[in-house]
Length: 283
Image (cartoon, one colour):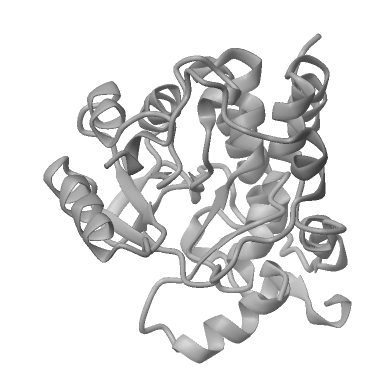
């Protein structure tokens, strides 16, 4: 079957991944209301396109903290990629590098930072850090990431406790014995975006993840002030399909959809995207 949209990859992953792995990737905390609302929130935003614009030449490139990427979609930090594909985060790093975009490696990776770095030399990577109870562990992780050429640190500050993931409890979820957390050895996103953008007043770049399923979702997020968006579950679906190649397919589809959405909205470059493109009455 041809894979033409991200929901095709989702359906494939649900069908072929072991139930315990699918449930872990798919579930959220408690009733999963935040997960579901993150997706539905984009449907409340409608475009106000500009007509009779020259979109014969399109440019989807943008920059993150001064580094150019091919389009404003990166890979969000998610854990346990080897549950989706044997090479795990190594495949993720290679796919992101091939598509010239940013990959944020998770503290909960099933490959070491060294393995991730070696898999895609010269790739644009950041490292996501959970603050460990033992601060020396956190310090060591940051130092390792810096020494390996990771260009940024993504600090998770909104998780003092983990949520109750009901399916994981029911399944008795544990990593398989051959997988380890190797680096530890030794408001709904789119609805909050406007307030965040207004609060920072251009002093820092604003990024968004959660609920991105189509290229038009990317355009909506950028119209509301995000500099870039990051995908989590869709990246795992791509890995589950064909590893590195599958994740590249996911990114290519998002890129093509984003490019088409830009053209239909009357934007030839990312710099032309702004709030004038969305109907605030629909928010």
